[in-house]
Amino acid sequence: MGTFSRPLNHTDVGILGPRSNSARKYSRGKSINLVFRRCSVGILSGAVASIALTASLRYGLWSLLLGISIGVAYSITAPPGRRAYADNLMAAGALGIPLWGLISVVAIPLLSRQMPEWSAEQMRQHFPALVGWVVYGALLGIIKQGMDDIAEHFFGADSPPETPAVSIKKRIVILGGGFAGMRTAECLERRLRGDFSTGITLVNETNALLFTPMLAEVAGSSLEPSHISTPLRTTLRRTEFIRGVVAEVDLGRRLVILRGDEATSGASARRHVPYDHLVFALGSTSNYLGMTNLEKFAFNFKTLLDAIRIRNRVIEMFERADRESDPNLRSALLTFVIAGGGFAGVEVAGALNDFAHGILADYPNLSSHDLNIILVHSRERILPELSESLATFAQEKMQSRGVSFRLSTRILDAHHGAVLLSDGKIQTRTLVWTAGSTPSPFLKSLPFEKDRRGALLVDGSLAVPGHPGLWAIGDCAAIIDAATGQPCPPTAQFALREAEVLADNILAQIRGRPSRTFHFNSLGALCVVGHQTACAELNVPFARRKTLRFSGLFAWLLWRGIYLAKLPGLERKIRVLMDWTIELFFPRDIVQTIDVS
Image (tube, rainbow, N blue to C red; front, top):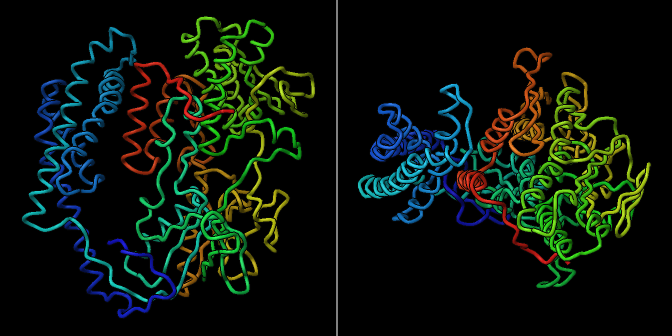
């Protein structure tokens, strides 16, 4: 599918209608030829490059098959570029490092019924394999690029034909670029592959999707911030993307009105975006339960900037404590309070605990006795989403590593230097708030029915009742599962499935077909509680009343594997894998990247 040279809008006058059946068949045949071509390039380049693996791993045929498989995967996922030898050399060579960690350090010992070891002696034994993987990756990138150039010379460019101009008959506008919004646009692009009479527009305040499951690792300095953010413009090739803030929705004229850029066009200049179908996927914001001091003094934990601020706050507190002579003030500086014992609170507490203990070596004037990581939770146990046994394991594991818990305790207020609890006070300069969320405040301006949280009520097909063409999904919608009658939780796995059903229902309404209701059985839950430790509770397919529960290193590897697979974009996957690999050998970075004042 080709990309638009410019976004189609309502002023376009098409000279061609929707593509004919013969054009669709040509497009399908062209797509098949492109896949076959890329697979062939991957097989040949992977086979030649696997010489390095055969020499270093010494597994003969298995090394060859492994090299070919990786070559095919790399060729399919990495789009060809003309004479981009340096880019492919660096990208594929860098890919060799995490592949070495996953396969040579972890997978091969596990397949040999041995536990992976991270000692210096063990790493020295793995060093020849590391060299082999890096050389393999570099050869793969160079050979693939050469074969792409040869194929282009003889068979033409590896790109579909240009998309003909068509008149836009229906406009679908999506508000919000989170998991629900971006997935809706992706599904619509896929289902409208042969129909260009329907336009798709996505409006979001930022130009990237934030992969929130890895946000705690940014706060804990394990991952670089940009590596968990995927540009929406790059991911959504057909969708028109608009970075902007929604000011209002004119239901009568069916217009989305965006705020003007006061710096360039004046406060009165606003952009109008017409729609036939409008999707609300605006997500949620932190809920401070009406406590204004908390909103003023606490650190939020919703956005990429929030995670960066928390990381820099920890470093700033260490710098101040390093020169503080008063032990009471030093203790307050090195006390970090996390409010909320759900997934977000537990993961950020574990990440900050690992980060803080890890950087103590850089501050010789400080000791672990000065450090306090305290998690405050209003219920009797943490992680209410998991079983009691896993929650107990998580708490005990975190306590053994230095995290303190204040359970059945509420935060009543906060001011500079202290947090007031229902059973006392904590002297601290850092409070991270993860204890509550609420749907986007913009929803308050809409004349629709809402639940007590403020989320939009929708019917089983995810449509807003009484307003044709309006839909809502994700955190800002109150969705009832059609099969169980239970409310759907505001989690990423549900948002992704809601988006798939919504895309089908929008197109069904456009084409005069019946809609389907939403139903999804949760796949389970995963939570990282600290260094190489996680909890997992997975539902067994076709036996939904049975669950698999496990914890420890295997659950941690499973967490990383699943979420790495879900992270959009090959480039981002490689960058995150490199960060994780580097973390095995080097201490975490303590450079402050923003002004925390």
